Amino acid sequence: MMRRTFIPTVIAILVTGTAISGFAAAVYHGLFFYKADGVMSRETAKRSGLMKDDGASFSAELAFRKSETGGYFYREGGITAFIDETSYTTIDLLAECERLGGCQFRK
Image (cartoon, helix red, strand yellow):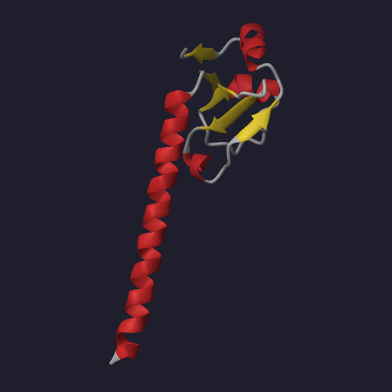
């Protein structure tokens, strides 16, 4: 009897864990974009070297936030945002936005 309930229980736990992980990733991504100092267009991000110009990118924009150490944390938006990690750069993104345009500042 116990053997019959073991497999469905394990499957239920795995599905629940996956759902919680997906929800946590969505909340983290949403909070990063909400707290971002600015948003950069895909074209500006490519010209700055923050996005690859491979033609397969689904991201429409890149959000960035100033770090306490002087650089910037950034994340791509779009479909791949939940897969990609938050990255860090020492490029002065405010200066790049001033030079290249294509940015919206939120703060």
